[in-house]
Image (tube, rainbow, N blue to C red):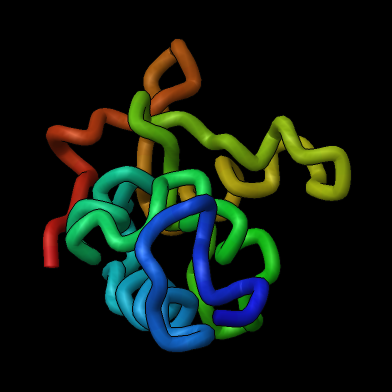
Length: 115
């Protein structure tokens, strides 16, 4: 096994397979809908952790709508990243028609998407 064959101590898989599965799933999220990091991990049968999903999306290709993945509270986690413009994820989601509550979160009962 080579370094990188495991994602955050999860079970071993073919090199890069988990990354491709995450990116393929995120590409399927429709405009105006979201999934959570944990939900993606669950759909992938918990083969990777929600944190690993976040790391994968932090360095994803331009054609992947990373902004459609939010934290378990319906909030934007990217505002905590030092190399990300604050408010960018929210602005993109709002341009897709998603409304935020005064608390800065999305109502997952309305906007959550299940494949």
